[in-house]
Image (cartoon, rainbow, N blue to C red):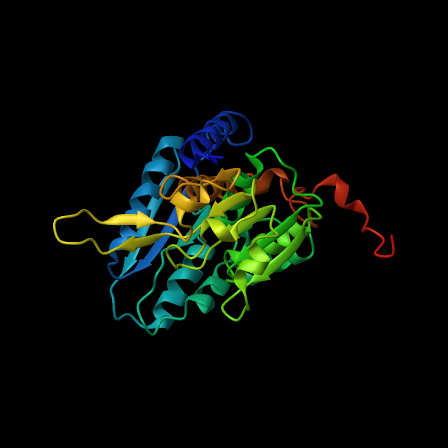
Length: 310
């Protein structure tokens, strides 16, 4: 067996095509959509991601407005900048560029972004709506990972899902979003004993911990869908180029899994596409896109809970 690769570059292009058509129709036709990007200091990795964001925005006609505060700025000054952007009528959405320098509380800053301008879906109010099964704006990486998992053509409903990694922006949102689809979800983390005994039972395996090669072929159920979310840059040996790898040992897992996301070229490009999708959802809010109870993205199948006694 050799796993089918789930091409994130192709999937991201499909999403952008859909969004481009959406922008040509009312109420977005002719609308000014502006995404404010806020960074503190210079960061090489963050700058690379920001360039991808700028290119994707330009492709759709979304204006990306960079705001860069100097390294060493007080956290309260960053908060004031966010508050100004929250009330700026020219701003559609707000994007915080990570990582922040030491001494800056990223979680606090994210909570200061107004939920209606939170393109990353990481304000506590938006995360809370996921728990209630009524997501409005969800974290982009979690959305991207789940979307790529669907490309395998296997429904999540009733499947065993294992998520390795319990972060607030990836692991936990994936778990709750898939619980809403009636998958059976097991979340593993740094204190999980005998990780392989859990991963071998997974029909879908999501991995996001930042440890290259953590998951090997002998830890994967034959035919499983493996979504590698990790991005790790390996220091090259002398004379060799820098390599980017995921959390999965692709060579061995590919011989066992049914589907696998590559790194690079998997979840990353789709994450940027989901950022654009969230931005356009915010832009449509004035047309009544959001109801009081959420965005209407919950599956109709979730109208009733299953009887645990059956």
